[in-house]
Amino acid sequence: AARGTEVSLLGLPDAALPLAEWTVEALGDRPCSLGIDPLASWAGSPTTSDPGRAVALLPSLARLVPRLSPGRQRLLRADGAPWHAAGATSAWTIACVAAAGLEYLRALAAAGVDVGVAERRLELVLPVGTRLLESVGALRALRLVWARVLEDQGASPLRPARVFATFASRELT
Image (cartoon, rainbow, N blue to C red):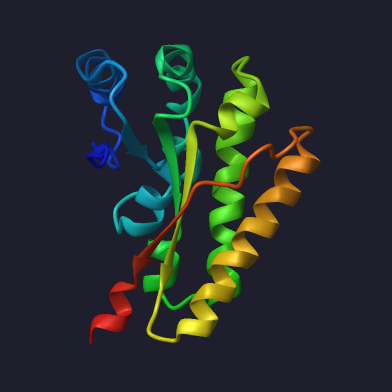
């Protein structure tokens, strides 16, 4: 099976919403991830100082949710890479990923999207390093934390969270 297409709109410029709409139309029901992560973009940018501005586009993006193919397409991403690269421990990185994911769930829910549906449009990304056991433990911990977040938000985690592991950039030196 072919891997999904990934489109990154991390910067979220003013043209991000029309570009995201066009991308959803162009891809049809092929597997993809738009990878929109305004908080990671904010955290990784030395020029943006307002996290509120970073998430201001989320309610507008909520209108794309019904047009996405269930289980095959993801809209938002909660990525721990900027925090890990800045020196966060595995525990802090898990906390930042969970907090970003919660913010995205709440924003979509406030725009009228069911929490269970919103959860299936979100992916979690955790950077891992060279310590195998610590990395596996962190991935398991993120799944457990995310299940508690969903439980707290009133959604039952019917299936495990979609968690991706990426190699941590700070481990490359």
